[in-house]
Image 1 (tube, rainbow, N blue to C red):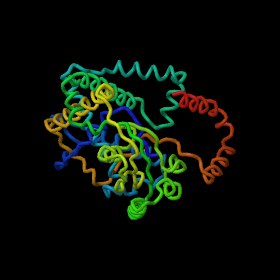
Image 2 (cartoon, rainbow, N blue to C red; image 1 turned 90 degrees about the vertical axis):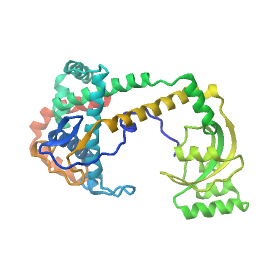
Image 3 (tube, rainbow, N blue to C red; image 1 turned 60 degrees about the horizontal axis):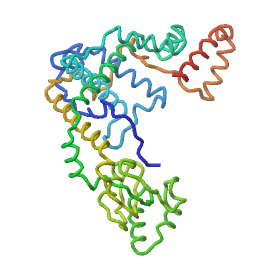
Image 4 (cartoon, rainbow, N blue to C red; image 1 turned 180 degrees about the vertical axis):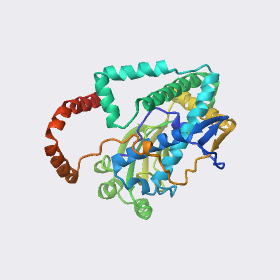
Length: 364
């Protein structure tokens, strides 16, 4: 189903900003406002991402090419690693000016809470070992996450829009707030979508064609009907199309990540200001926050020395950073069975600890 999944807006989501390289500086991955970020931090950030991808999707995943950018997964992970480091440092410096500081003691409290939830230090250490993650690395990440969370919360409160700003946004974007009833036919090919639209425009039965050709299992048996929905429930491209359509219209093919949609608008009513005020407040607040971060980025004097276009030559101590246990396959199951038989006594001693670790992970 293509209905949009709602999730909390993260700092990373509003900070997709470009990074410019500027030569090399030995031992330094990047610099933010005069503060140097060591290559060691870049190695950790990259290795944790790359190794987890390998563990989940196989060794070949890093060489796969992302169609939109033409970049390999590996290069995208390198870019993400350096971007995360520079933007976190940028935010840390701004947070410090706002009086926000997260101490080692704050992180220690979080770690102790984890240990209590997992059932003690032994299980906690076993889990760290399983994920090849030093406790110090976890501690630093907790500090960063906690700082980012407190920073975001405080900054959003500062940027809370006024009544006038909310009203103006509604007045300027009335067509974007609606309750609608529509049907659609989803196909994977633009040519097919155009042919379907042409057939419908000539009098073809929309519901019949939807049952025969639509790829959306959630609506095809109902003749493509999506029922009633409001703006924000569908993917953005779908919302934008509905906002421009009139009742009875058959849309041009609309492209989303799911394919090509031919939409029939059956009913649409504008939503009153009172019904969308809270939604608009959040939208305006996020827009102001995004702009604030973009302006902050321009002033931050970020210099990137690590070359994200080149493969990372990881020092030995970082090669297994963040590795998680790979899923069992028939091939390695047979190998494991042989090893287990040869090491039966050792495994018996470890089984209890592994079981406790897995239970703790599920609880978490």
